[in-house]
Image (cartoon, one colour):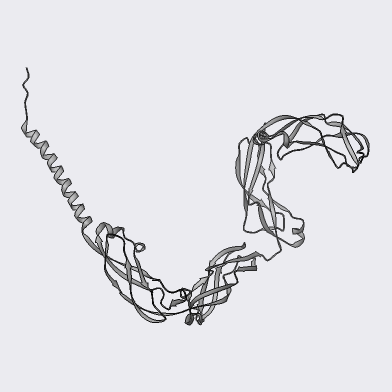
Length: 405
């Protein structure tokens, strides 16, 4: 029988590893805890807000900033940003004139204020004045070669500035500016309104500007006459048997073209290069070059994206009453010898599936007919993409008679 041997040295060694690991973990935890809870300081530069200033007053002091020194635990300071610090002047009870106000600071929990520099700000409080100015437009740069500014529209045309009278007196121009360098198409943009003095200095910050933005439309066109026309996609080839095109989407749907007036008068569309659909039986998309006629140029568009939706061809049969007459003369009524009509229709699967009996209108055209019997072709009003495969009967006898009125 084997003897059991107990090795005390190995047991002692294992316990030593475990104790060492525990001690190391405690030391690491102690270090992190001390580090995160040790106070540290940091300095932030933040803007100063005006609060509780009477509605009819304003101040000639704008864009004031102060440096704020704060202290807190390392983790709190690390997560602090300028957006979490508020510095403000409290104008409660302040009247017109010069005042020295202390800077108030609001901080998040866990962060303490050490100092504010400067701690006080001297402000001049004056009456708030308003004045309306004409809004001007400054265009910078030139359009693409062969293009020119052919007109512009601005809304609004007037702007109200509210601020200290001393600065209202310095206003030389209220304006928006837009760079049109290289443009070959019209520009439509909402633009921030600016204010300048007679030296060209930007003094916008002294005012409340109402409205703050303006809409500018700059019409840019070719030196030649222009016209907006549709984009047409010619198709060549045949789809796989049993398939149909249910939709053709073209982007852009229209383009602006340029040429002499005679060539433009009878131009209603320009073609792309042909799209070969031979053997297709699944939806597909193509990027195709535009192919304008001779002496016609296109703006800054050279190609179009064509998306073809291709579906299986399906059929569906209906039985309808022929009860409609078109262009029946006044004083006549109609009577049909045969009223039942059977039709077999075909089209893309999605259109056929959605087709209802009420979508099919059968009629005969009585244009110019007088009283008597007439053998007329049966015609159908159908939704788009629906075709007639078979119709029975193709003709019906209609008796037209005086309606007795």
